[in-house]
Image (cartoon, rainbow, N blue to C red; front, side):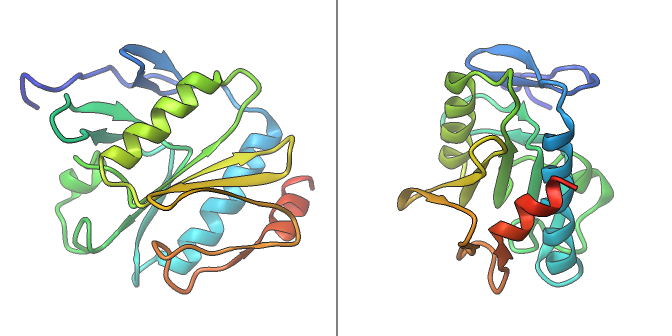
Length: 179
């Protein structure tokens, strides 16, 4: 920890630093929880031992260049072994300093668009390769990366260069999340 870091207590649900204020995450609905579980399971099965680490509600200490370090807690995060070595210490893995390789935010009814947009911008400025915003109501995944924004719908397959050889059928994702 440094004098240039915002430190917030651990809370349930977690608290993040968004738009210059402490913001407690919205308590999710079943749809949110089911999508989070499906995404984390698929990513973890692909990543474990080969590509990197995957976790849910994993706190990161994120700092875009020239800005203060602040906690952000994506619903699902993938952190590649290239970003944090496979043999990194448990302390470094517990709450990494730096941005996840891919951050996934599943929208909840109480999420404010300005807060979500700020988190996306913060992740990307800090080096996250892609931020996936999952919209349970619209059954869509909005992919934000350095190339811009694109929307993936049922009938499409989720793929991204930050997730080499990972594919996820979007129709199956939303169907399984409804069960």
